[in-house]
Length: 79
Image (cartoon, rainbow, N blue to C red; front, side):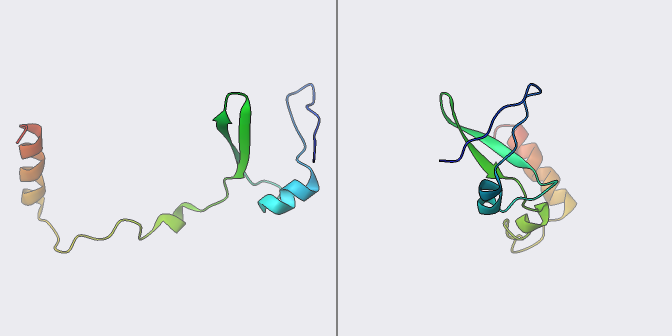
C-alpha cells in the first residue's frame, strides 16, 4: 500500500507510482470524488473539453428561429 503525509499547509505529495498509474504530471489537475463517508477516490481531470465534440448529434433537419420560438413558447405555456 502506498502512503503519503499531509503537510501543515494541507498538501500531499502524490507518490511517483500513483502519479504514473493515474497518468498525471506536473500541472495536471485531479479530482477527489467521495465514494462513502470518509472515503474518496483520486482521479485525473485531464480530459480536454474538445473530447466532448460529437456526443450530441446534430438535428436531422435544422429549425428556423421562428420554429424555435414557437417550441419555447409552447413549453412555457405548459403545452
